[in-house]
Image (cartoon, rainbow, N blue to C red; front, side, top):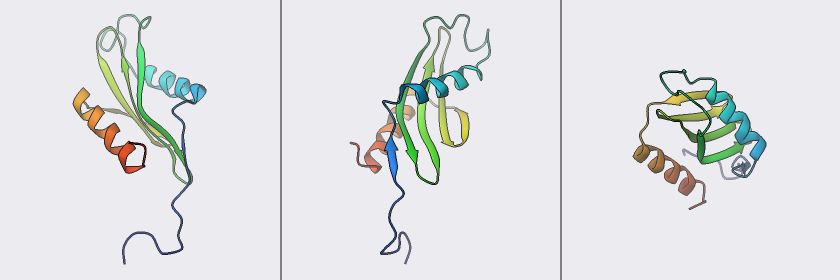
Length: 107
């Protein structure tokens, strides 16, 4: 009764983890959300790591990633056309990423 109807197909998704341009756009947008003096002093050695990055038909982006600066680690999620800063820690980041990848058949 619940879930997909018999003839209903799942939305198409594209694993975009190797899409360098898309990752740069998301990282740049997240960087603009950081506050100098609070989240970073210098951005020179900032690293961005993605837990997952998908484009889903009819939904948009689905991504989980983090920026590691000289002062903090900031976690972000993209859902549809929204980008949110998350109150995460490393364990929750890894658990969420692993769960999403497993749910979508990538683990």
